[in-house]
Length: 515
Image (cartoon, rainbow, N blue to C red; front, side, top):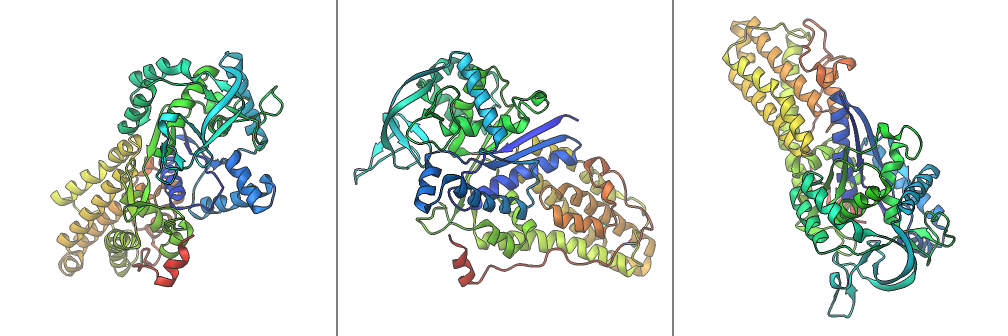
């Protein structure tokens, strides 16, 4: 099947990873793992965005040089990726030498196209957003502070700068949105971008001289690249640009990003690529925020949670499952300890865990070997038909970038398997017809096997253990193996519980999670 190049936004390491970073990483990991299991050649890129004024200021405040500062902070993002089983093919850093070469090569292509010129910038700039804002996009608050559209303070800046002729790309971008309405998703984000571009684009300042922590501009001593030119270039770096053979991975199939940075990806990025004569990514998906009791998390509000503390308390796979299952990808979603406990206990401990435990325990009591197929009656045929349709449903969810819909379909199948066991009651049937009881357990075990294979992208570690308990060989766990039955008579290991019930942390632990 075709190759699949998927990326997260690269994280700005001026603070500890938070649950929003974890959410994006886990969701993109699900996409990458799903594609691999579906036989596709996958490249999954994530990493850190390490240049810019914000980093320079944070390093100065810490009393160390910027490189030492980012080296220390990046370790925390790598640790998060490792702990949450993020199966990236590369963790890119914008301080990597090959990335500097790629960013400079992109710059040179834009310069060769005549889309860069030297002038003087004067306008409003948000250090926190690393973004320039027009006068009409800012407002003055009652205390006299001027803020940009995201609510972050802006300051007036004046300096010599290279400019990118963004205004030249107003019509090409509108044509792109009309020709490829799937380019920006969900559709609400595309509508926002179209409205923004229709108001008219102004040329963009793309270099800075007031600090030196950035990628040097080719042939312009004293200038470093605007951080978004640098950061967006990482997607090309991950494909191997500008070295020969980068076309194997470029253009990207999907950029997964937060909705607060859609403008940079859906307006600036395609304009840069058009100027450079490079193909555009197929799609950009702007997901929503993870909220706590209806509010966006922030240090000032005291509601920021450290994701590894949640993973440690609830388990990595249950935490991953909650993030993917509970939030409709593309919309804002809620997290709370109560919500995690309710979801994990109801769907993992009670539904899936209980289904696997009682099926495997009954098989163990009957000899501990995979039972033979029994006669397929109407219930078995209906169950098999439902199970057979799961893959196409999950593939459609993957194409739509909706892991929540895939998990909904799989957990619905788990519910039908539980209902099947309850109705067929193999524990009672064994007293009168042991062969029929074995057949029921075989049908249940096959259904569990299918669900476990399809749940691997969400819960790789727990599903590997479940497939071990079912006696599924490691080389029979891809989607192409869904129709490969269990081996009749194969000896199974003793069943163990995979999803114990969870409880929220004690108040003192919950307090310690806030950072």
